[in-house]
Length: 152
Image 1 (cartoon, one colour):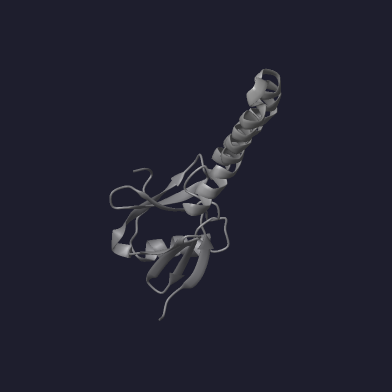
Image 2 (cartoon, one colour):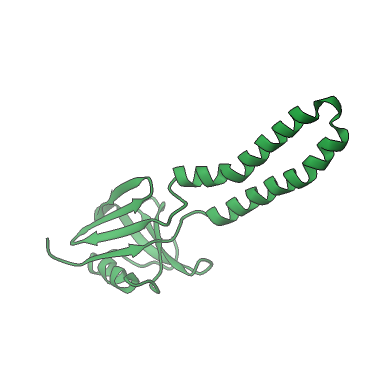
């Protein structure tokens, strides 16, 4: 197979880190304020209440990590280009991107990255030209008549 061959690390499409941090903060607050409250107001149910509080805290702290891992958002996806084929690999697997399904790309100022989208306007990938193969990927897109738009 002839043509370009490179791998580009993509950006996550969701705010995974912020979400995990908020859930961990909530879990820690629940634990820090819940244990003294249960100890003071728990009465004869103190041991059972502490078990429930501990379980809720573990779910709040570990839950977002597990969910992000299962959804493939914990580790950034990777785009592989070989010839005219594109493939996105995530922790959970991979999917083929067909050139005829790509609608175009635009620059997102808030994320300082480019958004590759399909013909319906759905985000396929986020990438930066500051990354190692970012400029090569831009050339690949323009060589295949995938157009840059100001916004969609």
